[in-house]
Length: 348
Image (cartoon, rainbow, N blue to C red; front, side, top):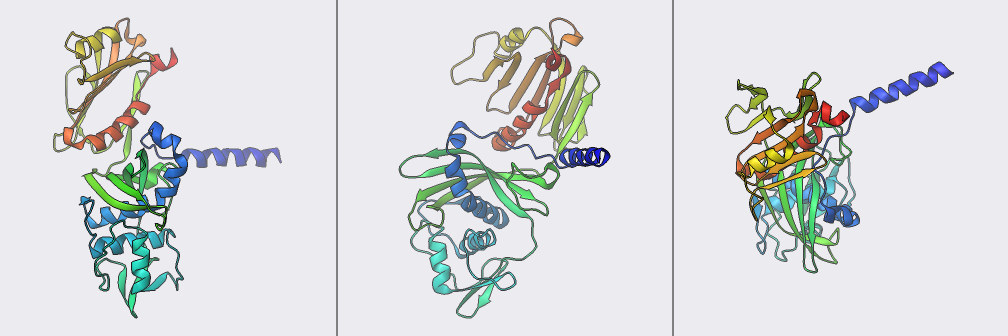
């Protein structure tokens, strides 16, 4: 009996290790304080994110009527996710035009919907006096990881990372790392509506960035440090003194780890050009023995004291990236921050 119990414990541990949850961007204080509201609007955010990404839409403007393809795409995603419930026959849902328009009115704020009688999106076809929605079609799940909200009496603003899951349906927080791919950034504007399916209707959205599809790769220098980094940094770039030096094939992004002489305080002062922190300038601070430098102009640094290398030596991780891809690289910065381990610092 004890042997069977031990075997079950080992198998459980192996399953936990092989199906570890994917790392996600950390939620803001506002999102954490309003978790019930985030859960309430999550199905609508998922449906809009999937429709926008599949349609390759970058913007739906506030105060404008949505086109037929967008309405049908969001409707189909909402039906697949059971945000909207209707009788199905082997995954096929037939809706009359009055039903189509009523369901759409529960998703979009704009009161004047377009002509929806003609199919305008894959998975939507003509049916008797209406449209047929194929909710059983095999395709990867696309959702939105909401990490920040701004709420007032008139509207709710959401910031989210769009992600895709291979073979499963889950939140990004619960998904196994090997199944998840980050796809882009989306901002949504919702307004309260008592008739809306989730209590809020879509007023607008913006997809300012589509991320390069990547997974996290592991790098380790024995007894010095380790980290996880996006695997589109696939080119090794020889650089004197660097312990790790990588770039993407386009040469737009570079990551390196190197030694730097000086204390954390001296490094931070040097990064500020020898002067104090400037108002509205680069953001730098020392936190729990770690010096962090980050500005909004494409440069990110982490530094730890590396006592194993001697007194007054730090290991610095530096990431340079295109400033216009700030949402994507804020996401990768979170993972770099959480995974960059300098052994002497972590032990001491």
